[in-house]
Amino acid sequence: SDYAYAYSVDGVLQHYIVGKNQAVTFNGSASTDTNGNPLARFVWNFGDGNDANVTNATVQHTFTTANSTGYTVTLMVINHNGSMSNATSFKVLVDDVDPTAAITVVTANPTAGSSVSFSGMNSTDSIAASGDGLGVIAKWIWNFGDGSANVTKTSDNGNVSKTFTTNGTYNVTLTVVDVAGNSNTTVQTVQVLRSAMPWDVMGGVARRAWARNENSISTS
Image 1 (cartoon, rainbow, N blue to C red):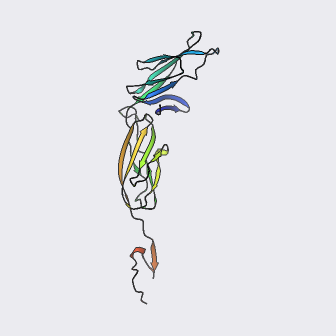
Image 2: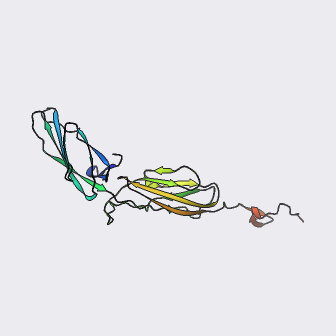
Image 3: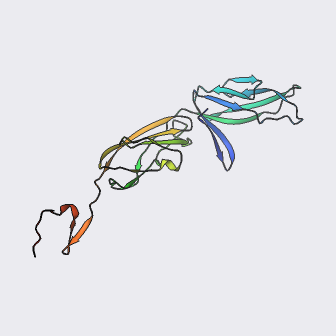
């Protein structure tokens, strides 16, 4: 599955996160027989009332019911002599809760022609509807409302920089997708100001360049 995520702490697997109603491939090919005998069958129990007894090392299964505490998936293997291994097991959390997208405009008073920083750092994701915070966001997809291509980030809270070439009002869109394939979109209006005009100094009087009258007559 494109959306199967191994959640580890200090290199130790805690559980997998998968999406509801998505086919997930389980792979038992790392299994071995201590005596070197070839393996004949792979016996899976998916913890949701379904199992599989197959000759191939890989098998697909679809979880149709969400479970934020996890199903215990168990594998046993049988060699060609009929001997069965001890069971190995792991947790699979099935997530059908959409994340929450949130846009943060990091740059204050953004102006045309200057880099503007955006962040998805306040976006959140949970596996339980009550909001456990255990979800993991995989993608932050940005659209800046100026006709440019979408920008997809997969790390750093989706932090991104954008330069708007002209001032105006832009509808900035952020879509977040979690590791289970659930998604959420938010839109925020961003006002991009006209670039500040340079100051010049003439005769000891500071004034903006745009205020100069090009047709004025200089007198002494």
